[in-house]
Every structure is written in structure tokens, then in C-alpha cells.
Length: 147
Image 1 (cartoon, rainbow, N blue to C red):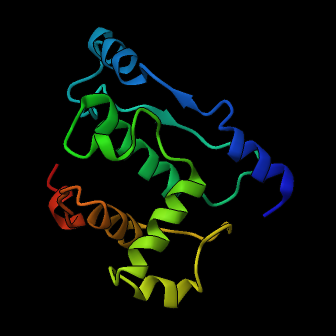
Image 2 (image 1 turned 135 degrees about the vertical axis):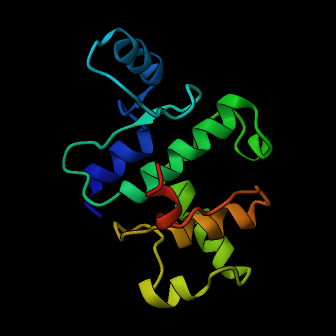
């Protein structure tokens, strides 16, 4: 990972935005062309990419999940304190989960993710939340397609 990107990620600069869901809700309600819309919880902090960041979308998704847990005071919020975990924190949590044998095949497939820009996905999120003993439900794509 380039040192300039590492510095930006460590400083957590400029990519967290609160209140976006509430603004979207108001805009959708005011629109005369909206017949239906589904929004996530207003407790979610939007986390966007930094320029030249690369493939951190899986981490950004986990950060948004963690923001909901923290901001809503849901079960598991104490695991994070009052701050959404950084990409490096998430990498460490996933590696720890693998050390515990949770979805450890992910390490075999990736060769490890600590300090890298490697893709992660649902199995890594599942490993992390399982290790932290935070309950969750995985919904298969075919279930979601009904909506």
C-alpha cells in the first residue's frame, strides 16, 4: 500500500458524512415521481472512498454497518467505543477472527489482508462480527430480490 494512502487512512480524513439518509427521505417525500423507496436507518453514517483509494468497498460497507451499531446503541456498540473502526482496525479484527478459526479459509484464499488493499466481502464481515459476538443475519440475494 502506498505510504501516502496509508497516511490518509490512518488520519481518517474527510470520508464520513452523517444525516444523508434523512436528507434523502425528505427529497423522496417531496418528489411527485416517487412511488416507493426503501432507505436504511438514519443511524448509518455514509462512508465514501478517498481518491486513489482502490478496492476498499468491503471495508466501507463494514464501517457503515459498525456506524449503525454505534449510533443506534445496538448490541455490540461497546465493542467499538464511539468511533467507527478504521480499515486497519477492521483488518486486525478479521485476522483475529481467522486466528480463532472463524472462516479461516479466507486467510488461505487471500494470504492474509493485514496492511494490504486486498478485496474482502461478506465472509470476512461474518468472521469479524462472529468473533466480536455481535449477532447478525445474512440474507441470501434471492430473498432480497423480492423487494
